[in-house]
Image (cartoon, rainbow, N blue to C red):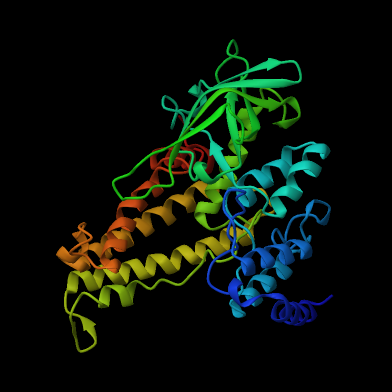
Length: 393
């Protein structure tokens, strides 16, 4: 079928099947068994899943539509034109799904990927620990074999959205006697069991998605080990590449819809800085804004080039470079907006600050985490130096 014919059929199908309540910006909300979706949103999720359009690039055998890139881009374009929410995104589609596709057994793919495609369960990520963050290989959460299952004990930090999640993929130590990189395994854990406890972590920015997740004899089937026992370092690093490419806006292995919105920074800054003859009156802020817009445009071009240069669905180490520049530019924009707002950008008291001012401040604080989440700035620079530039240790 030609892309023109596919576009026409897609447009008609969306118009006939997307309910009014499922129209709006963003993706279909991730499916959590603990959160009841509104009727129209639930119906749209069901209809998209039937078409394979919740994970359109995945194979049909696992709930996808098997769309090639040209058709995928047409689908996203038509969904946006219709104001319909685009495919599923998040850790389930962009992190663990592609990892199971690459490393999972046939049985694991048949079990887990259709669940992911239907949005039947939200996923948390269990990597960092209280004593193992940037030095991830020092993790100490243990998994001990007990017949046809493993018993997990330990804690994971910064498990985003864990209070709403149904499953968690975790890196655990299965062979403590081996060198630290060699005794690690990736496992899939059901969070709805007595052995799993989640504790929210409150941040200065206000409500926080971050949590600490504790395991006390949590049970994992031996069938839910991904990539083999003691091969978790290899599998886990690939998953991190999927994560970083998502942060960078270049992950074509999952859902890329809705990640390249045009900047609205000029209008926002213009709300707080007087203008003279149509220009911002502050020359320093005017220069800063111009540089930000130029960098934002260059970032979008770099994202597009990185996507076009990918020879397979699996991202490479270049994702670290694009992820880092994207995070730094976003943080620079936050600093610019707060500076333009002056004292209005630092109103923390809900009694004196309006909703926009409070939202800007909370976003500024929260997005400081962008150079920590998915690997710190320093970790990314090390990867770029060693794996991209080939510099010696």
